[in-house]
Image (cartoon, rainbow, N blue to C red):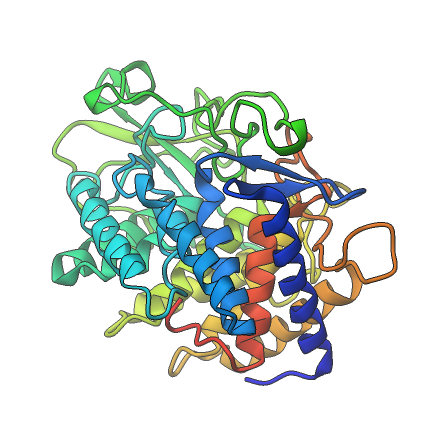
Length: 439
């Protein structure tokens, strides 16, 4: 794939912004930046976004070819090592995207292999997935849309057992998150992005995590809090409940659907659960969380690029394209589809554009050409309307109008590190410099 000068200019601005950010944050990890002055709120250990910062640094190193930039990227990836054994499905976001672009870095390769083995060990065959986990707070027996991207290729890299676990992990999340296909509908219902496991009479929320793990006060995907403690320049993240503090509904989600153990919708066989229990839809984030929909589409696109991907994943991709209006909706969606007048989320658009570019690479996928055209349109729209330019009051290269958490009002029009990453990754792929089959 190739693109015109607009993509080259935009990627150059993003890469320059990475250099400025690196000088400001030092050994900390950027999370989101104020849209007025560009100052970053940071975390010490990276939280769920640390891999995107390492990935941005690797993209910069590939763009500039400077040895100092490559050294900085490798150092950031090395700082992700403590997450390899952390109890969280967000290890896919952290340790896949934080290592996959590290060409020629044996340390990054070893970290990815270590993480893949650890995640495979965490796969629960009773449930058919790697639980969301307790490392980022809250009950560990949960399934969330943001626990799938990155984790599918990370698991698949762990050999035959890993490929089996990757397929089961994706299938179970799609079984839960995708709405039923039965019954007439004018258009598909929105996916439900978050579920909690209740086993027997005891819920996971009431019990501590295995091993007595203590939840870190770090934010997780879509959460309402950033890491506690001082940050560079004295800026701290806004206070609020840590991820996992989402309040679960007492009853099934809108539409009355509760996933029971056993066979599930769509004709796909679920793993047999060895203990009584059920999956109950959580109230927050709710259907219509557009970044959650983009995460699911990205995970399915990743899976379709694996060898011997089954045809059902192509059908799932088609369902997601329709349910999330990825080919027909606004180029930059609202953060919450049921609030069309609410804040936008450019990070959701950037994730979706990368997923669409991946789908365009899938052999035989019927919507490949439409996906490629839409991805380029989204990337062009993001760079034209939401990327800061030189000469203004803000640093150039900021992707504005990203929404961290619309429900809590946290960072609702900000620059987000993962938005920057996926915009840069998509542009690099469009320019033919990054092979999306590798990352």
